[in-house]
Length: 343
Image 1 (tube, rainbow, N blue to C red):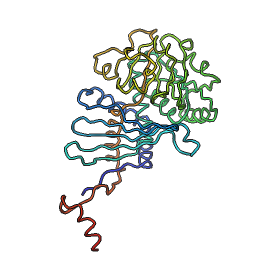
Image 2: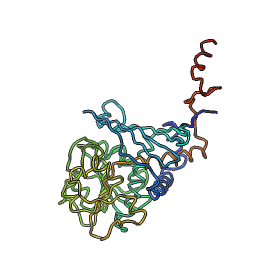
Image 3: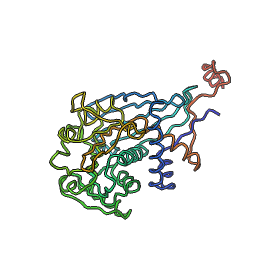
């Protein structure tokens, strides 16, 4: 049988609902941490991007020598005008030995989970251990997942919310209130961040923005900067980076797409895998400002696909696609249409 296992958007949503969002985030967190700790086993590339005025389409490949994975993903900030998500994605895992696709899945929903799980994983090493509050700047599609991940994995229990789109903030506040989390709707970025132990910036506008400036920040705050993800798009004023200890996923990619694209090429950063494996320290002082300049990396999608494949298989949520032709003679591709034509 050559049919390829497939997880649809509907199937993924049903699977996460059945398993529970917090449990899925925990499982994905563990899968991502496991793969980052075997960093040197992976063949890695910065993602391939095709940019236009409206957004970007990207391919994100990676391989551990046994399994090859890639993700197709877009980023179009004005997609809400077309009733489409800003980000849409799907992914594939394939056998390195034969090239045969092993699993195909939606990654729009799963990307939100893996981004939140990675953010929480990084914050476990970078935020203060007594952190209990978070400002969410940008209250769009990613925000609920960030809140649930940080609550479940780090014990964050109070969320300060700000977005210039008040409807987005009200949507987020309603969802978090339903989960029993404490929310404070704020009228400005400054109001949102002035008491926060952690700040997550998840803005969508493709521009060089100064969402956070140095004067806004308290000593000891951790910044989870996840909105800057392409050339020409940033969220942090350069002075924030100059006064912080900065962490990234894959430096060659972040130099192009992250907030550090504003900085000199020798600006010092630490890759996340180095912290997870003990080659480097995370936070070193209580009053230190730390920044996770996260642009998303293919390894995270590889881990997320593997986790969701195992979960879907265990829960019986896989569908199957007739993607690869079945041939009596693998060298006779023409025979497929010859037999069809004769029939």
